Image (cartoon, rainbow, N blue to C red):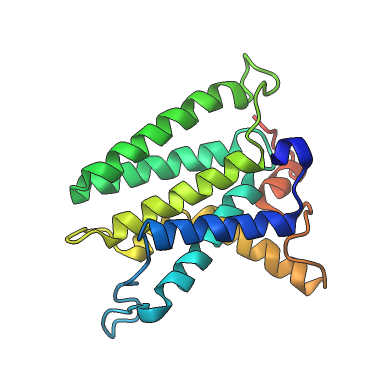
Length: 205
């Protein structure tokens, strides 16, 4: 629908919230325990678990979406994250997440064959679009929450977050810079890390 009619940023945000609520309330996938973050014992989200999880989902969805600024970047970041989640799932014995992470990694790898620029491909022949990057963000959040919330899992919530640290830090820094400039944090600009690398002379490939 977005490709056909160009949905506004506000409506996309509302749809992201709806997707997050489906995941949390119908799928029962929620962040209930943040682990021992401060060395004072386990930090639980309690009655705010749905609200907290929705905020996490929105953060990762928009982080991956914002990285989709040059060919192959969002897909490559997702591929790396899926690899880490599959490895962590294997280490923790969570077979379901391992299989799904590997399945998504294979799908993204097939996409990157036609999206990455290489010496044999001077331009991308397929593109992800907002629908693709947002779907990947939702799935990565799902993996992170499920993996860190499994009984007996060796993966702590903060470990799952570190897998996505690069896009999350980039998003946070860009949004903070935009607000300091007095503009909307969701307004597109050229302040991302990949834009800085391009300005420094690095090529897309």
